[in-house]
Structures are given as structure tokens and as C-alpha cells.
Length: 245
Image (cartoon, rainbow, N blue to C red; front, side):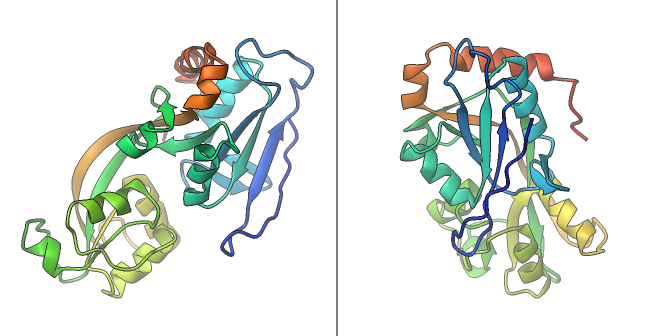
């Protein structure tokens, strides 16, 4: 496998791409000559470390595609761009994502490749209470462009700021520019560790636990009818071969 890192300007973000050419001469049984996937830099699910994309989610995706002898290219970009690329037909799929009605309109999700523990994090001095009163009187936020951010907006929460990642969320929460944050537990814990803060620095409450998978565009799946079934089978075979800690 060779890894190609492409630097492109996109909202002042860096775009990373890796391509699998080990099976470039192999004919994938159910897919295209090269599968085009897109994702975001979202450790620990996927990260760019020492010239390679790694993480608990991306490792499973690569394991499945390699077992299918499916050549692929993965592009890392802003999350909103990742989804737009699939919606507009520029890419075949994006990950790692929870299932939403909006995404279901143009794509179909795979079997789970990771489990998201979604938690409320409360700023210093904020009582850990979520109700009809606090949702309009306190300042809430989540990563901008994520399903979490849009869920807050749709459900009448007082959403402020447009944080680009969990690092910014943590900073705003610590400084009380935001009162309550909604974020993935694994992601937020990693940022707490990076900031040399104890994992219990903020009070938190579990909101829900939701499976996450790979979304493939419906146009792509209509063209390659057997692909999703083959991919799902390959993911199940890869369980236990990758590290989910």
C-alpha cells in the first residue's frame, strides 16, 4: 500500500489522501476499479499519524477492503465537505457516521464499525441538568457540521458558536463561553488527555449509545448492487482483527 498525502486548501483545512495500490491489478468482485472514500480527522476513530491514517474506525475499513481485494483511496477533509462530496457524487462514501434521516436521503449505511457513546459535558459551575428551562437559558454547542450540532438546533437548544473540532469545544467549555457540550466520549477524553486535564475535569452525563458505520451513496450502490453486502460481510470478518480500545 502506498500513501499519498495531498494538501489542498479548504476552509483553511488540510486535506489528506491515501491510496491503496497493492491490489491495483486485481479485479474487485463487487466494486469499481478504485473506491473513493472520504473522512475527517477525528481521533481516535481516524487520525493522521507518522504519515499514515490510523484509528479504530479506519483500521476496520482498510481491513475489510483489503480482504475484498478492493483498491481504494481515502481522502481526509472537513466533515461537512466529506459528506457533501458523497451527496454531490464526487466520492462513493464517507465515514465514520451515525445514521440520520438526512443522510439516508442520498446514501445507505453499512453495518457498525464503531460504537459512539455520546455525552453531555458541563462547564465549571454548571449544574448537570438538561430540561426545557436549561435548553433555552444556557449556551449549548457541538462540533459544527456534525449530526450532533444539527440535532441541537432542530430540538430547540440555544446553540452558540461553530466549533471546528473537539479541541475548540474543550477550550470554550473550560472558559465558560459555552455552558454545555455534546460530544463523543472517546473523542473528548482524548482531548482532555492532550490538554493534561483529568478525565473527570468536567461533570458529564451519558445521552445515548449509537452505532456508527460507513455511508455509501445510493447512486454508487445502484451501480454496484453486490458491494454493500460484500463489504458488510468483510467488516464482520474483521471483528477482532483490529484494536477497538
